[in-house]
Image (cartoon, rainbow, N blue to C red; front, side, top):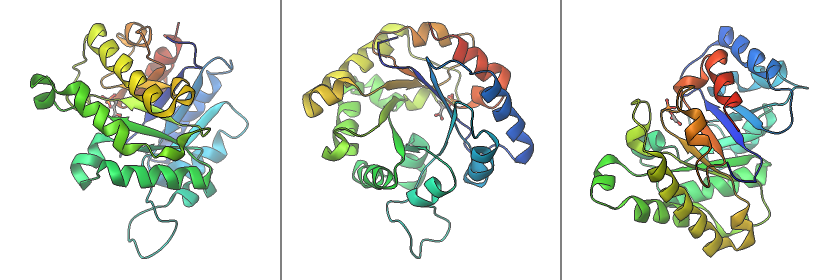
Length: 248
Ligand code: PEP
């Protein structure tokens, strides 16, 4: 773990109803220390209620996406100011499920990052290569391109995290080896510092992709890993708390 304050963020994806809010309350009750930042990004339907339920605790709440526009005729979408109004403080942007399922490009993600900043949300920008790209030896180049294309120049001085999520590791139970994770995270740090100078040195780089209680400690201890973005294992408070407790 590097010197930045570690962040452990749960991505509930399209899982959870009001009964699942009890899991968030259990997480909130289990994180009384200030050393680690912990957040949950539930489905949009639960953001407001979760934010109300955990108000006054250290648990942060966020969305899983937002539109770049603040309002308009965009049926089914939600905007960054709406997430903020609902009590969110974080937003995941550029998740591979949105890049592949909705054709989101780096340029679009960049406009969403701007929208998040304007609304007072902290974006968590996801990048990561496919298995085909990794096998072709392109992982570092792909991730470099995604970082350069998805982060606008205006990040300087703003709260922001990057999540390295190899697409082939998401929801598959597969994870890169620790040296493979370190190689990408060190490379991302280099790109961030090259583009943003000292501001780039302060951006947390989370690892995401099949993080679970059994592998969290070694992944979180890897060089330049500043926390984790956790999907499936964030749905149950017991598992998520074990991951949180794995931070050295
Ligand atoms: C994710 O989708 O952000 C993720 C990391 O999922 P999982 O932990 O289930 O692989």
